[in-house]
Length: 350
Image (cartoon, rainbow, N blue to C red; front, side, top):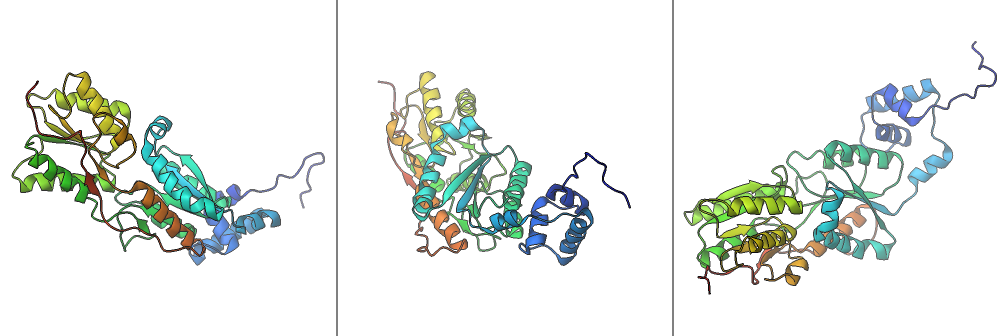
């Protein structure tokens, strides 16, 4: 029998070593040991065998900590820090979430990530370390792997987006996501606009697809094509760049529809610096109905999607999933157009 060398401290095996030996994630090791989550019996047995072979077992204090309620909810956002800091959308969302979480002793753990792989790995680590009781998922995507992942991890979660009974986790948001954009197109048509361009968000986002479809469909019903459709990220510089390019077209649009209020405000400023009057030469429509739109001149016509109320409804849904006794979420209706001063008929110069 081999004896430990004198003067050398035996290295305690880690959960990462067990995960590597079993070919699973650390979250799966935690589930196998604690009897939680939705992993197969074959996987559970493989993990336990690897743990036995390596001589690993969770400490009693760590197990107790993982099983204790943390009263912490994760909000993971895929945005650069500068975009998050300049976009009031997330401030409104967090206000709605905190309005329900804070009075019940829950707090938000905010993380920024670069891509889907980082986000998924973060959830697995947070669950394995027992640091959160639930998660709020933003930016629903086509073929989104996160709901199934979190369900498999046994972690309560909500996904912000149009309600969908087929989703593995509850989806919380206003229905008829394209309704506000349709209203915006009809409003612009009534003002006499026939050359409209749409600035869309990233193509993989579900709300991008729904709103773009509504824009193109509403124009098609009037017998018109879009002057242009441009996909963009949500940065200020992207808003400026795409506005400059659209205004440089030989037959430039007379109305621009943006995916959020921050970009729309950047669009107004860009048009004004180019010598155009808003709305005399160019009408601009935003999306979100944030306070920002009421502060600028001209005040922004926008689509109200009730960001704070959606955040509050998501928090209540998640608290119920965590076993808290809370009133049912109060959310109904659909996105609606709020008409202000940034849209109007084309007028000749004074």
